[in-house]
Every structure is written in structure tokens, then in C-alpha cells.
Length: 124
Ligand SMILES: [Zn+2]
Image (tube, rainbow, N blue to C red; front, side, top):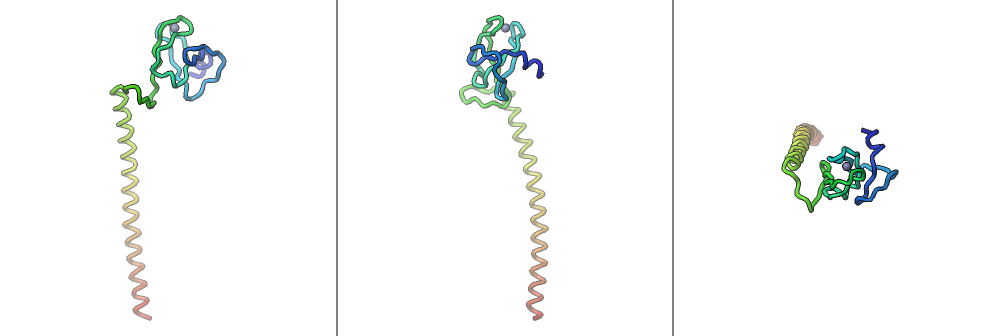
């Protein structure tokens, strides 16, 4: 994976810029025509570029989790995000239940303490 990235050529808006650093936000993909490893800035997602090796017209893939308001997400991607959201929701729900149980415990403790204080006042 890392090696692939190392010999990848860097394309920014279709302009070759070999030697530029690959950032986390860059999209790394293979040319479907010649298999050449290509790199483009994330802003190139969904754009049509020309392969730096064979010159073929290549559609830059849109990375997972990327939000493009001007592009329609494919249904599989939306479903994936929905599942991720549900998983997070379940985690939050479990945490909430634990906190509710803790709250009940604290309220009981508080009740006992109030009784003790009331008894103390009555006795004095
Ligand atoms: Zn190519």
C-alpha cells in the first residue's frame, strides 16, 4: 500500500506534479485502462481527468465518507452511513441507560441522606 503510494504520480486538476507530497485528503486510485497508480487532490473527486501514462479519460472515484453536496451519493453509500449512524445511536443509548441507572442510585442515596438529616433535626 505504502509502496504503491510512493510511485504514484501526483495529479492536481489533471496537471502532473511528480514529487509532491501525498496528503491524507488525496485520493489514490488506479487507472482502469493501464493500471497506473494515480493521485489527485480530494477536490478532484468525481471529475474526469486524463491518465498521466496512457492519456485515457478517467473518472476520479469519490472516497468513502466524503460529502459532496453537488454529487448524488450512491444508495449503498447512504445505507453504509445509515448503519454507522445506527451503531453510534445504539452506543449512545447504552450509555444513556447506564447513566439513568446511576441517577436512580444517586437519587436513592440522596433520599437516605435526607432521611438521616431529617431524623437528626427531629432529635436535636
Ligand atoms: Zn492509464
